[in-house]
Image 1 (cartoon, rainbow, N blue to C red):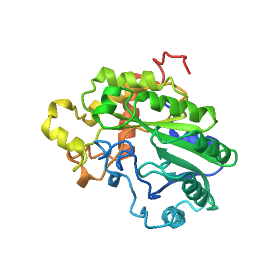
Image 2: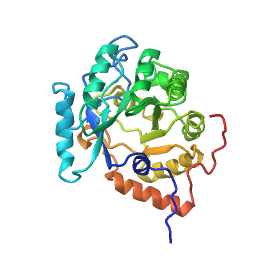
Image 3: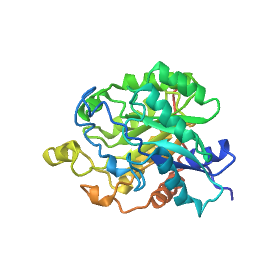
Image 4: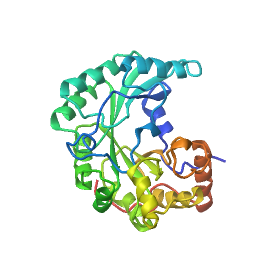
Length: 311
């Protein structure tokens, strides 16, 4: 019996557009953030700690070429024929002079096994000059921009000190897509003072945008962050989902999500020693197995209750 495909997964998406097996290689290119250096604000977003997702080989003290080489060497034995996407992840990877950005991106693309770039950034840190340049790169290389949206509610964006509105994110995504560049949006589910109905409504609003991918993850409280302090002072602001609760939330979210979107991830796994709470103790594939089992039980399909035609 053929297995029903209940959502658009990222691995299948990559397989459909590349002739090789593909892997992201994370790069720390030494960027800062306008929400830390005073241009937009100070202190960063209340949940942010970049230690939670940088591999050991990532360091701004190393060149981009060195980081790529070390990352590729890690995978080479198991996947000798694999190609790579250089993933500029740490902080805001479009925040710098145009000349500096060109140099960093083109150094990554110079590697013979790198077929494209994935650039993580804020929606208030792109402009026409940069997007026009990336549009040209996109003619010969794969380019995707990942925008940190986090919430579609301005009240939440203010609370978490994002420093921009949802309208800014909408505009950046539309302008990027208009140039033929693929876009991805990050959303955090379970941010403080958001009700479950408000969380589910994110699916409706984000589905109106011309996105290729979406990345979801549960709220994690990281030690030393402003949000961890807020949790200690105002625990009533938060609902920290158990794994089973989050799965039930996610399946309802997926039902409302644009069926053409590719879902790159459902959860994020921060190092246990950085978590204020203990986490779920589940590996990514274990969580996905539980999620797919629940989707099968409930006969959930991505976009089953998608109701917008505004794209």
